[in-house]
Structure formats: C-alpha cells, structure tokens
Length: 311
Ligand code: CUA
Image (cartoon, rainbow, N blue to C red):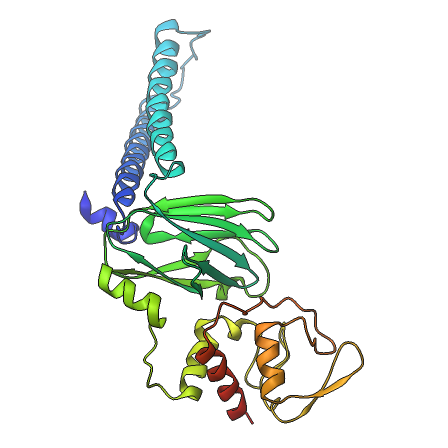
C-alpha cells in the first residue's frame, strides 16, 4: 500500500505526517472498497433484474432487517472515522510545553518569522530536527493560510486573532511553506522555505543569517530582492506593481504623496526600507512591512547597492 501513498502524498517530514497519512490512506481504501462494492451491486442488479416481457414489479413497502443493516453498519464505520479524526485533531491543536515558539506574521505577500531571542527573518525559517516547534500565527491584513505540506499542518490565519500549529520535524533539509488562502494579486508568490537544521547549523544561522560574509553587496542585494519578498511588489523593468519599480529610481527625484519631491539617494532608500511610511511615493498606498529590526545592517546596505545598479 506504501506505493500508492508515496505517489499521492508529499514527503513525510514530521512524526505527525505518518499518523495523518495512515488515516488518509484508510479513507482512500475505505472509499474505494465501498465504491467498488456499490457499483458492482448496481451493475449486477441492472443485468439480473432488467425488465422482461410479462414481468410484474412486486410491491415492497419496507424490509426491517435490510434497513437496520444499512443504517447501523455505516453509522459504526462513520463513528470510527469521527473519533480517529478527532484524535488527530486534538494532537495537532495542543503543542507540547517544551516546543520552541516562533511568531509568524502574514502580510501581503510575505511571511515574517520572529524567534524567541528577537531574531527575525522574512520568507525563511530555521528549526532544529527532532525538536517540537510551535508557530503562533497572526495576520496584519487579510486572511492567509499557513501550509507546510511535508509536515501535514495547515491553518487559516485570521486578522486580529492568534492561532497556532506545531510539529516535530524529522527530515533535515528544505521544506516548502505556502499560503493556501487566496489573498490578492501576490498570493501565488507568498511562499517561504522551512529549513530543518541540526543543532550546530541552527546556531550558526542565528548568528549570521546564513549569508556568506564575503558575498559582494550588490549580489547579496539581488538575492535578498527575491528571498525577502521585495519581488512581489517591486518590479525591475519599470512596470508598476503594488509598489514603485526599482528600475532607474536611484539618483532621480521622486514625487511624494504629500506633494514634496525628494532625491532618491542612499538615505532615502535606506529609510524607505526600514520605515516605508516615512516618505510614500505619489500614487501608491503604503502597504509595505516595516523592515526595521528585520534586516541586518549589511542586508540593508546590500539592497541599497543593488538598487544603485538598476539603471
Ligand atoms: Cu497570503 Cu494567499
């Protein structure tokens, strides 16, 4: 039966995934069994009892035995499914007390992760293998949905409310996180990567953010443009998105919403990344997340350096 599971379900990345899959595959085989049974009886009956000349349809009002059987057996089967599902649901809802807590903020169209030590990251999150981790989810704007297929966890995120998911990752490496609730134009870009690290790699990441300290600034900036979610609002080719394009902005005057004009120099770019509401470009709403305390200094410098290259 394992072959079918491996075709229709993703990798099992957590302890919980195995339990979910066992139940899921039970439902698949259960449904298949009754589909074949009912279809076979229907086909048999159509052939066996088809109308022949001279047939008179007998007059049946009811059959106590038959009706009891087709009520009680499905009831028992559905109760098994209900309690099996409830057990899994309860397990998914209640995290163990020693789970690492990570705050997740969903916002059009990025995922922000905040660690207990204040470390923050956009669109990437690192956790330790074989240690339970709990994600506390909230949204700053609309409905989103935190979905980690490999871990078999998925939860709607509702504005102004905290919800949570937890799991114990068992498979080191990269796993996909996606938004599973349509949340606007950038919905399909709203993806993040879950890295399941060993203890040493995790500590190292907390220190360095996983970036090679020797990478040239503009290269690093180009990488961050993708990984920090800038690309979902800012184009590189001059086309207007949710935010102004980055093409040719550096060194030119920018019209602001309040009627003023500023020169887009290093200070302006720096400020617009850290505090996007400070100087809003004419024609745009300020929907950008605040990156103050999210990006490391070198990362901000890298983005400035990258924007400079976009002539
Ligand atoms: Cu957020 Cu779809």
